[in-house]
Amino acid sequence: MFSCSVCDKTFTRISSLHRHTKSHDVSNKIECSICSEIFTRRDNLVRHNNEKHHSSIVIQQEPTITKREIQDFLTPAEHIYDYNGKYLSSNIVIHLL
Image 1: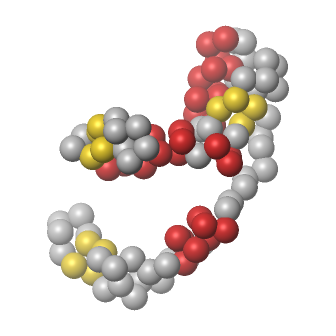
Image 2 (image 1 turned 180 degrees about the horizontal axis):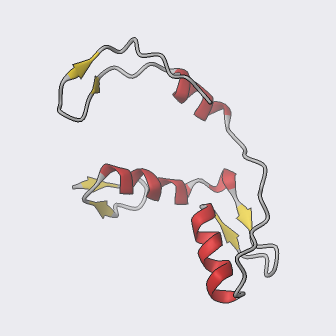
């Protein structure tokens, strides 16, 4: 089990925990253009627009990235494993498209 360090909610998959932690990040707010409700994840805004306003139109917000996120991205991972659990080198180069 994986537990959120902010609210102690637990998850069975690490990917679910990572998605959940974004809900605590208030620096990346997205506002509904119709009713001004605030969301921290775009998928929740899309669902909100579909259910509450019967609209599939979502205004694209300019992506924002914090200095901390850049530092975390550029910090090399200490231990990287493939899907089979085999250790990979930490000297992996990431190409951005």
